[in-house]
Length: 133
Image (cartoon, rainbow, N blue to C red; front, top):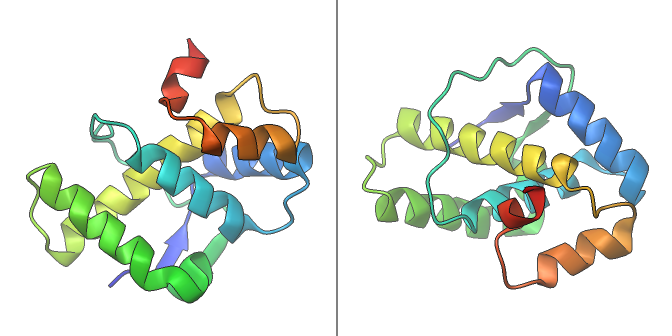
């Protein structure tokens, strides 16, 4: 299981922007939304090396809270559906890829100015990446 989560400096800046826009005070809440947004995409995230060069860090327990098992199951299911191995290294990398892709999607959405917009995007039944075009 993933122990600690540290985002990139770019993602850190994007999370700061999201925090300011939405007034959601906790990194873990924003990261949960970002992870789920990425999982909702039908295509797997682009394989890339993502640095862990920011001060934003949390444990898996903090990320998932009382639903950490649900987030873990979502990750396992997605990796299985994408035809990936379910070993620790692959799961950790896929989690990072999904988390960072989701943060980018949320931060890049020009329609997101407050928490109401944030919730509305979560309720819409379409891909968030469609809003970025």
